[in-house]
Length: 341
Image (cartoon, rainbow, N blue to C red; front, side, top):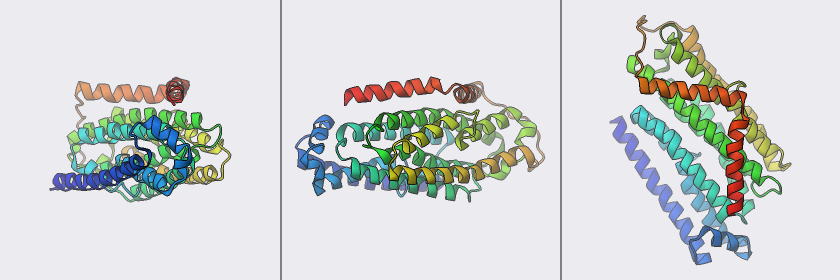
């Protein structure tokens, strides 16, 4: 029942978001007479970009992609779908689907909507603030591990969106793309590791309740340490890679010297502290609580799953110490997009 309910919610909200997005695309096509992003960008950069129909078309189109990345208020499908779906499917949705959505948003904004910086900037700022705050506040109240990470995923989406709050500010665009690509690469690696550990632990506990993770350190120290490192990364604590992702996002919004960027940066700082509340709560359960049923039988982790956890853990730590490795990739992507534009 849970799976069917989650699937239906995902389908219905997806249909709604797609309808709004297609309506926005039709408005843009009606005003420009083309579907080529490069041609749309040229017209949006001109007089058409100031027309109400252009602004409405752009905002409605972005709504569809906001659903894909589970940005508030288009996030309601994520927690139920993540919990109801098999955990490997949840891992795919939280990584592949979301990453594809963000790549599409970057391409759409920087090629097609380049001239509409003001409405895009304001919309992205509102989405970022709402997504970070709502995701983190609801995650604090969760008792199910998968639902907690579902809302954490929503909050992380807000951090990825945040640099777009200064889109179009002179001298900021390269930093925005670099920050977003860096965050996506690190988030993908860490989230794969998180769900790898969840799959392994659930093979023994058979439940997603956080209380079932009590004393994990006592019978599966490797998994506990790995999850601890991933939680540090998601919380932006130095050594693990997540600190560099958050630093890049902060740097992008602050260095723009724009009032909207300062507001978003303050909200980012507050939400970074809030997120530590539920990340450290799971850490306490794993390392300090007693094993709920007293069963200290070690967890047998299949070799492929163990390899996924090990590789993502190594990458999380290596990129935390040598962040330049991921920055080079992000800079390359930023340069490629700039040349394409």
